[in-house]
Image (cartoon, rainbow, N blue to C red; front, top):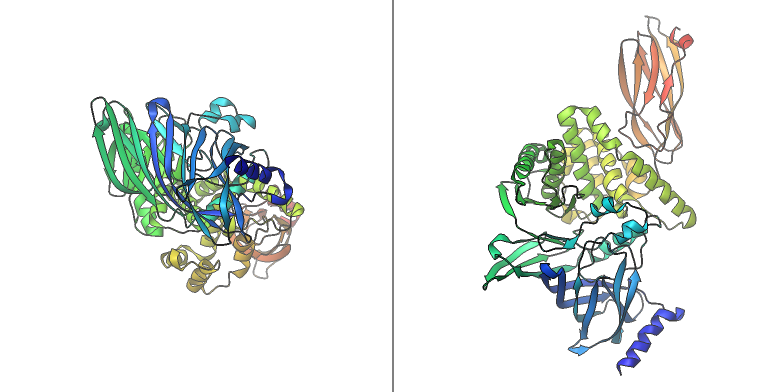
Length: 575
């Protein structure tokens, strides 16, 4: 009867009325036995998964996806072989640009909120593959430093969904050439799977000495043991993610040595000890800043060396993968403060978790080299934010339901970079002391409402911040666009003058923005709150001739900064 199941599954793919809902099921539990054979670049997985139907209608079919270089070998339900068909499904959530998809015909319909257990098996190779990046025009040498995932004889590093789909998922197709579809697809997946539990037993076997091989993973460490029988070796380690949250599961295998610090463990490859020592020193220097703002680290961070000296760093959970062959201490300091912030302050909301870690990097630059250095660091993110806002604005035109507010953003430029600016603006508005107190009162398990953080900050400042959170956090209203509309001087009876400056915000988001009056000898800065599509006035008293007025010092991200300087005409300056 297997042929009947095949026909049923095929009909799902070709009959519009029976269209397959790939995102109907949520994967609530994984229990996987993962076997790795480095010499053959092979990965073999056996295990059990539990799925819950989170759609509104009963489901008769389910999609299971892994990387296109892996092949489905078995799918069973209740000890019986399930009917399924496999095919290649194009999607850029995997480095190969495609997935191996199994369409499974279930023995009975699963009702809404109903669950089903599947025993699964798949295997294949995980080579370095830059297909998806080359397809959109990225040069191969550059692509290899970004999509560096692979199982190799001497070194293995494999990240999860978004890079290599080495554990089963189910998503709609996503294309890097089509705007933010990849980020949106990954965002939906992470939101659905945030409460999932993942347990894996990693087994690495091959030629050589087990004592020289280390298996590393960013999950909670369970049992670890080694077996050496003659020349072949076997290294096993158990890890869990309970729950998965926003963590991207990954594993790394190599000939690592380790350097331990109270707040950090650094695993480095042969010849990279000096780089590991530099990174450990950077982490030691970052601890006081992190502790002052976010509390003491609650767990030990882990930094793992990458074999490619030009590989793009990647962080997930408490683990950072980065080359340790560099001697650039400034880069290490930024990485360390970001990593340690994650270990000190947890939130299930990405805009808080990632935004604060980026905000901490700006604080580190300010501490080291002053406010201009911090603003310069943040300014490197501004173009990406502006471009992302333009893309989202186009989506709003096509689909009014499009929503990339910070509380549900799936675009990295939003929940990382834009969120960093939001925290910096809040700090400027309420002051360091008030923001530190608000952050110290934060508890992730109490963050049930989107307004939770707003109320924590308002409790410390007794200031109404609803307008700010409405423009920047709860909704995506784009960016402000400030310009000095006018500057009118008026002579004072006792000498000097009063300069009245009007600021116009042409954008759809409001902000409290600094305005600087530059004079013959010196300058003075004041702050003014300018709501969207509104104007606000402020006054400067001066005994010196005004030369120019600058709105925004770079602390507020704007859609257009070309109109931020207003030259005071000489005739007016002389009045």
